[in-house]
View 1 (cartoon, rainbow, N blue to C red):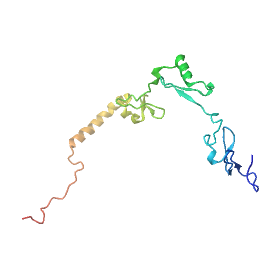
View 2: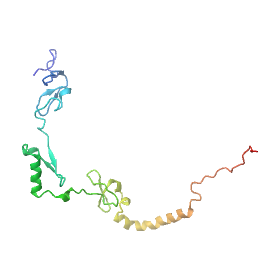
View 3: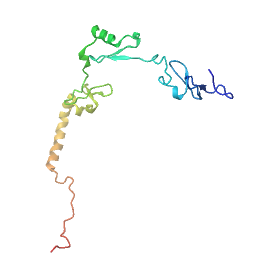
View 4: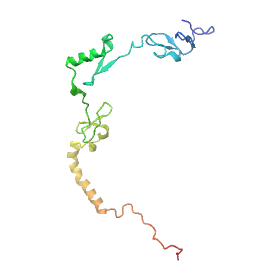
Length: 183
């Protein structure tokens, strides 16, 4: 393989794409076919790499139970046959397809890895919107809040007694009659 220029023979490499052969001072080595390419031909698709599937993994998702089945090491076996074998194996259960949902009433969020929070008080899994005990009717919060409910009720009674009399009302200057009178 030709490298560099006459003055600096160890500097850079020529692109090994059939039609390119560009001298590149920052060449890329394909991790599948181990050839050297320029920036334009570094991707598998751009240089039509024959070994592009070498380090990749492929999976098929079962439509019945939503389980992913790896098809990489099956030597080009048809995906339909792999799915049929999965269905006949007994591992395929339609009940598994149902995703866990947030137990809070009227919440329809699906609990995923990044959307799940476990309550520290009661231990149930809820979505991030309902992660605080007050948001998901936490059982332990109800029992401990009965003592604080008395002090909370006193506050609510005092707030209701005010009935907005001096709450946010600003006194304005008395209105004077207009200086000009209309005839």
